[in-house]
Length: 73
Image 1: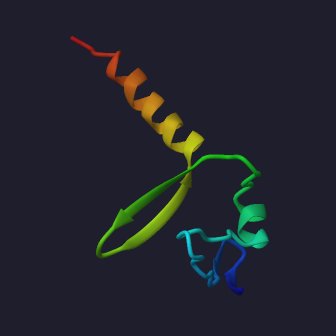
Image 2 (image 1 turned 90 degrees about the horizontal axis):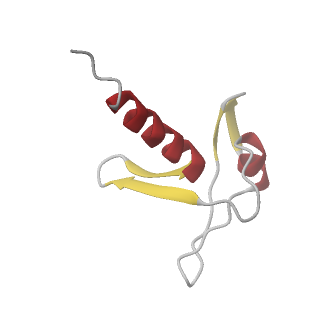
């Protein structure tokens, strides 16, 4: 693992025969990823792939839905 600073790192992983990767322990610890948690895989052809905890995405969506109900005028 190449630590850039306390909040960023670069690490390589290998893709297995079924397309699976292992998230390194350092990354799981930093982002508090526990066994059995659901992650969202998002991709952009130019910018790459991102993994985000599903509960974070659901929280954002809930905020959007709730704010949509507060229409003024």
